[in-house]
Structure formats: C-alpha cells, structure tokens
Image (cartoon, rainbow, N blue to C red; front, side):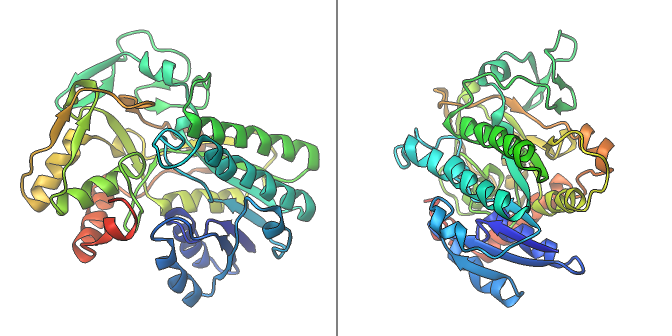
Length: 355
C-alpha cells in the first residue's frame, strides 16, 4: 500500500511515516515546505528509512498536481496553533491558506486519483461557549466534570464525543479545521473516495515541536528542564486546566485500521485522544516535572488568553466500538519519553522556534 503524507517532516507526519513503514507492504512518500522550524531535522532520518520526501507546498495547486499516485493520503500539513491568526506572528489569512486551501488541493488530488483521504483534525472544533459552560469541580489540583449536575449532549465523565456542540466561535484554527472536515465529507460523497476524520486530543511525544499554545506537554517539560520561565494563565492562575495526551503511535494504529477497513460505510468522524486515564492538569504536570528536574516556581497570571478552555478530554468509545482500538501508551510513558528527549537535546526549544 502506498501512502502520501503531507507535512511529512513535521512531528505528526514523520511519526506516522515511521510507524506505517513498519507494516509489511507499506510504502510512504511525502511532501513538506519546511517552513516550520525543526522540520528539516526529520528529513535525513526519513530518507534513510526509504521515505520519498518532496519539497513542495500544498497551498500551491501546481505543487500537488505532479505528485505520484497513492492509495491513501494523510493530510498532516497544518498550522496547529489554536492562537494562529491572533498571536501577532501569523495572519488570519495564513491560517486558512494552510489549513483549508491546502486541504482543498489535496482533496482535488484524491478526486483525480481516487486515493482515500484521512484528516487528523482537532478537539478544537468544539464550541468554546459550550466548553466554557461545562460544570466543573476542583479535585486536588485538577478540574473534573461534575457529573452530579446536568450535562449537555456529547459529554460525560469519559470526555467529549462527536455529538458535542460545534457551534462557533471555535477559534480561527478550529474553524479552519471544521471547514476542512466538512469539505472532506462533501468531496467523499460527490466523488466516491473514502474519507476518515480523526479529531485528536493533544498529541505528545519525543521530538515534538511544542509551543505554549500547542504541544503543551512537550513544551512544558522541555521548558521546566531548562529552567525557562513558565506561567499558569487564566482560570485563577493555578494551573488546574486539564488536557489529555495521545501518542502518535496510537493514532498511527487507528489510521492503519481505518485504511484497511473492509466493513460497510458508516460513521466517518471519530474523537481520538488519551481519554481520562491520560488526562492531567498543568499543576499536576509541574509536580511530575519537579520529581524529574527539581522544584521550580511557576508564575501565576489570572488574565485569560483568547480561546483557552478549562477542561477538554476526548471520549474514545466510538473508535473502541468500531475498530476495537484504544490508546496503549500510558501518560507516564509519554512524559518519560519527552523527559528523556529533553535531557538528550538541551537546545530543542531554540531549534524548533519555541523560544
């Protein structure tokens, strides 16, 4: 099976490429524009494993028209920051060029070649207002869903499922991914090629180009190890906000199951995250880091950033039911992997543009 991965030299793209190559009979080729700091470091490793890496930009139709045919495309080329378009670095136009126009060009490629399409989407397609209205209770150093109160459709103590509200506002980033989801499903219906959409929680693992607004587990551990200044922002400034972590090798396993699926067409959109077992607050993450690197003071800032939410955990029940899939990497093993990487590469944050 031949798989084309866009953004192949990014953290997610390169991780998926390496893991799919371990499958018998799989070939991987990819395209990357190398504008993300750190992506160039993955090129040599991928080439040594037999991945064909093309330098190109999926935002340009001319760069996608000449791509070789593949059986499946994984569209991992995106600006993954929830603050994109509001951060003073990227423009609102750029976020839609990256996350929507690039996807349209790849969908046109699938229309032409008949390749299947897989979109790693995001938990940030869910409504900020609905997330902010969730009843939460503080237990120890972390927020939890207060199941004793009435909960809206699409949420339980196990996290969000696909029935949770996607009513805007979502963030510019979230709306770009939601629009890409809708277009992917429309192309699939109109031109009869298979599509799977996986709404991922926070991806985390060694080698991630983590920043404060995405890749928070990696960013926090690398910063803590280097004694870089860290802040708890918003929600009382105590770090009680919670996210779940998903290792890319677990996502790669689900994608493999989707690509080789032979069942009848049905659900095409799934929530995919670490779930409650792999969820942690920033305060809990700091306590874990203190055990690894020694204690460090984290500053408190009560003012809140745009698009921040206090609790966001993904419910994997539908993927478990349809594919017998569940995350195998524990939160502890993910954190240990990142910490080992931080010790090995003390300049990682500078190399990947996080400083």
